[in-house]
Length: 113
Image (tube, rainbow, N blue to C red; front, top):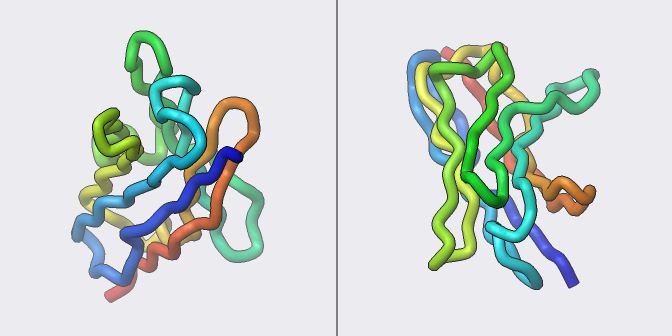
């Protein structure tokens, strides 16, 4: 059974940083293209970033480019999202997903002064 569990969210001030983790179970994180999404209150899901399975190429939404970095640790079977220069508009529930639609519960990120 494919399972994903995101963690690492919290409350930070604008300009702060957080690192989100997504632990995979039932598969290896390098066997799918892995993605981070976020969903702000009252809004639909927004794609944030992708890490491809084979080449490890990364892609980012324009809204986070230059501030967020996606990565994975195969030994820990974990996907990461390093977030920096956080803005209030980054406030959302963040969750990870595979390119085949598997996703897990999200983690709340709140950016506020």
